View (cartoon, rainbow, N blue to C red):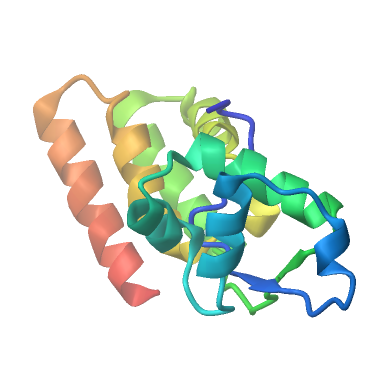
Length: 154
């Protein structure tokens, strides 16, 4: 999966009721995914249930969206605020110096998001990814501890 590609693991889809569904030619994977969609299960759950990789699932859902057979269930996803990223930058700067802002930006991009719309449920994953750039164990541990406390505040 491309690092640039959007992560769909938390996305939820629902089938679109159509009277002309018999006019579509869909393969077994598409049918399996279509039948598994219920408007409640995330794509990660469906991926595991159907034993499909996320890449395959992304490809199948893209086709189903194009055919207008499914639609994303829009839910409000909480995102991290500027104060979180400011704190992250300060803590990382203490551990590695002035390159912290670049590393944070790269990690956010690698996870397929932007700083303005970074989902809060992926904060720990972001911190873990960034902490791999800290080579001194003592500084890495302090960084992780402080960031864990900040995440708990969320």
